[in-house]
Figure: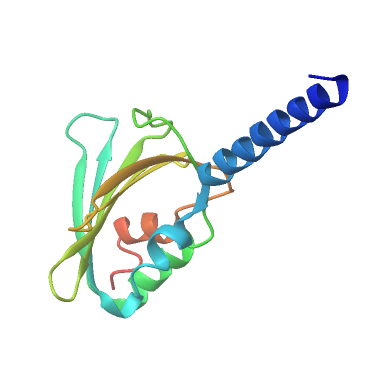
Amino acid sequence: MGKSGKYMLVGALLTGVGVSLMTYTASRYTSFKRIVTNTIRLEEIASLEITRLSSVPGEKKDIIITDPAVIERIFADFSHIQLMKSARNVNSDKKFSYYITIVQADRKQRFDIILKGRQHMIIYENDLKNPHLNAYKIISPYYPQALEQAFDGLLLA
């Protein structure tokens, strides 16, 4: 093999590695909108069943939200979240963690979402054909204002 053949082989290998790396990196990044909002329409949601767990023992609160306007506000807060796949065993950096079940009008539970502080989100898609769970690091600024207001009773009235 001549010198030019070796350069071509090295070039082909580097190109293959580059394409593989770009594909791997692109598959790690996504958004809440791409995973959830583009999969289920707001009109299909009958309720959000939400549990707020605290780092303080015994501090637990459950609410069920059926008001479409409140559901829309919570989804609006989530819709701009950018995500990067991460390890599944993430720790919460804040006092509260939220466990959210999205219940469709036909009583199917399509998604379960665990929001751990403002840095991690775990999404379980209960698709009967292909259920799967992924953990993500939130990489965009995010403040769960509507969710916190719902627990403070400000959005439920």
